Amino acid sequence: MKIAISKSYGENNVFQDLSLEIENGTITCVLGESGGGKTTLLNILAGLIPYEGNVTDVPKTIGYIFQEPRLLPNLTVEENLRYVGGMYESIEDILQKTELFALRNKRPKELSGGEKQRVAIARAFLSVDKEGLLLLDEPFSSLDTALKIRLSRVFARLWQEKQPTVVFVTHDIEEACMLGQRIVVLKDGKIAFNERLLGVELPRDYGEASEIKKRLLDVLLQE
Image: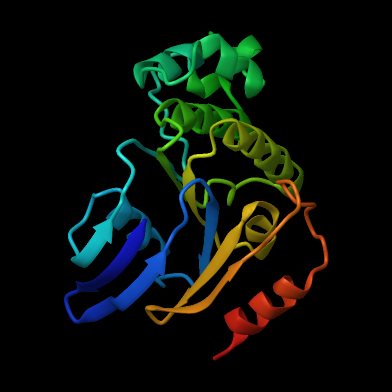
């Protein structure tokens, strides 16, 4: 997927000639300051907002995981999943893989925050095929560290089966280093950092010391 775009809101230039290539079948994590255009980039890729320029080779099927689960409150867990159809052989299959089978008849108001987000993850994977695109907008930001690690493992297991193209927006360096195969930093409407992380099965260990983490901090903390 190739991106060459500009985007403004009135006199506010979010992107000016932003150029980025995202490899199919990989997880790209996008970091950056608040208001730096991370969510705008996701919405452009999802075809939700207008922009100038070109985005080419966009997959035909797109799933979106938001900060809030956005489940249909009147439907059970299983009904929420069936609502999007099914790229899996069975809904039961993904219920088992996301540890939701015992909760399949519960409604969202009966679920914890982590359980709701697992449903959102399962729903997104149901909505895409192997050549699809998954967009994640800080889906773990409201969760505690232990739950964040657990859901990252659930996400990584599902991704390894299908390996759709993923663009994962986060403000958390640890999340990016756990799941990213490429890490991009947006700053002042430009790409301030863009590097491929090779090797190591996902997810990586949370809090693992690394040289790339030090360099990311340097970039993010620069005035």
